[in-house]
Each structure stands twice: as structure tokens, then as C-alpha cells.
Image 1 (spheres, rainbow, N blue to C red):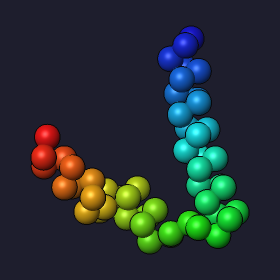
Image 2 (cartoon, rainbow, N blue to C red):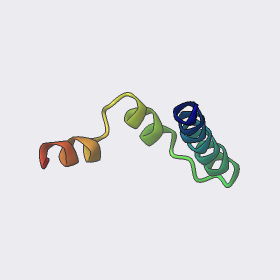
Image 3 (cartoon, rainbow, N blue to C red):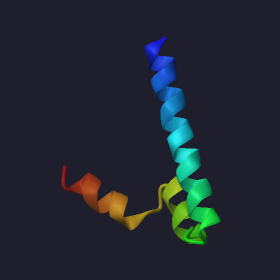
Length: 50
């Protein structure tokens, strides 16, 4: 049960982050779509250093 609550909290926090960023006009749509599609260069750099 605690795993379901943790997963729900994680998803809710992610959605809230996007909503608030859009609300205050700070959402970078290109970066968001690139990150969700796995094309973010910052993610690839950190993965290769592991």
C-alpha cells in the first residue's frame, strides 16, 4: 500500500511542477518534450559518467 501512495505522490509532484511552471509562464515546451522523449543532452552526459 505504501508503494502505491509513494508512486501517486511522485506523479502528483511531477504534474504539479509542470502546472505551476506553466502558470507562472516559465515552462520551456521544447525542453519538456525533449526530456520526456529521452533526447535531453544533460541526461545523456550524466548517464555516461556513471
